[in-house]
Length: 71
Image 1 (cartoon, one colour):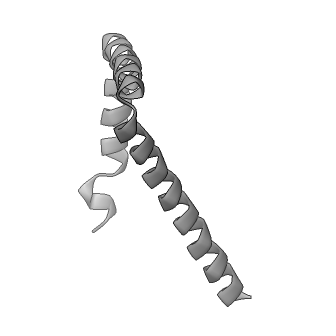
Image 2 (spheres, rainbow, N blue to C red):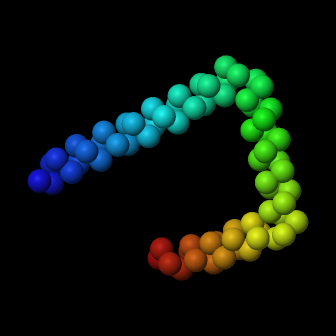
């Protein structure tokens, strides 16, 4: 039972990594998609920083994952 779970997890990881690699390859091969993604991510990050929700999320997460939790 445990071995089959490990094999399934290994296959899932391989699929995820292959999908990420394929996505990166598509971005490299299509500059117009790169520019669209750059515009959308810039717009999203500008809005997030203006509303300070992203800053709060990063701050809150860093507090949750502070060094004392891992010692």
